[in-house]
Length: 406
Ligand SMILES: [Zn+2]
Image (tube, rainbow, N blue to C red; front, side):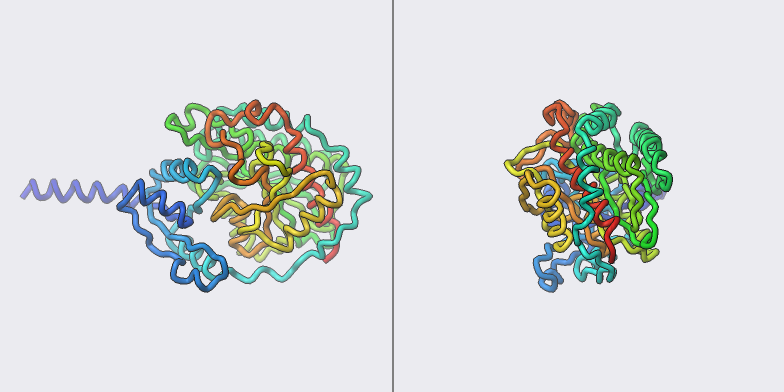
């Protein structure tokens, strides 16, 4: 008898932690295949495979239930093979996971409002871009990659949020109509950082510039052996910091509200940006344009800027190409695809907001050092000239959309 009780107790104990620490993921076909190879017992709890035929070009995605404790390892497996960020979205519970599946199969209707994408702010934009420089971006990259790691659940990851909040607050303080705040997330210590430049007559309409604050080391030693994340994604955060500096110093007064967001927990399933995008959608906030900078300082390809065509907005991508032609005519533009949940723009896209992501190179030629202790400023060539191109594009995007009418 006792023995039976013991055996029964053992099974319950084994089950208890599994039940208590569950997480739900949506993953691309490629990611699902990678995970199945490592965990043959893993089986999808849902997918859009059946519906894929419905939405032109939609790749099937899979809903997975996994132990929360295995997420870092899953992320390692996916990143090691896909060689770029993302590849899966993590969801707080089953219903959020099923909502993501449903949205993927039948994308929601975007909020009606569209900017006119006209370019007409040359008098403001040209001097602003000229006043931007490589040096402050290089400094911010080195300051951020000086943290031993910026992992979403580590003490240093949380410290990086406070450091960035203070750094942005010092810059934004010169503006006069701006705020900088931490945005806390459930379940981990790293907060996202949000700087807001208040709008005027169109203040209810919001422009979002984003990059992710967290870093990860997927090698065996894990984050303990260092995750400087100089290119992934200190380069994006540093570019936004330079945009904030120029907006604050010119005391630019936009018609629309501009938000610069450094997201937490991108590397472990786009957790920070999903929280924020969903909150904006639930309050029906009119986000008229989202730009993501994730890896902007490693020039691995002949062309300067690669616009990603999947999980982004075609009309807004065309607008970005026009901004480059107008304000950065010496730069060359390429097009590429990145796959499901490639970076935080995907969280906004999933909520029906127009999103874009200009990338540092063709995907196949991106920075080989990412997600390791080798992702240093030195391994990006001790330069920030490449990231400056993206900072200027982001500034032109904000200054044109911020000032133009509906
Ligand atoms: Zn990244």
